[in-house]
Image (cartoon, rainbow, N blue to C red; front, side):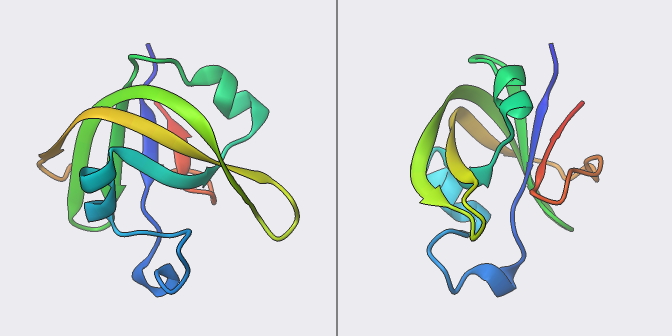
Length: 107
């Protein structure tokens, strides 16, 4: 089974409520407002491993519990989704592989 990779946005984006620091994921259990393609959504399954990271130092692993529309969209109308995560625990940083420009990847 594939592993989902979610990169947290840079601190400069925190002025909007769409982008939150990695600590927010620990508190809420949700990776907030990711832009996911239809292909991404079809590849994400409940129970798959997820690695959330904030380059260059923080990383956590958990299990995908589901994907829900957040109700927000990008400026060009693409929907955003919350990735729900169970059992999220901080782990040693391992320099995860590159992700797409939206902060999402699979390995």
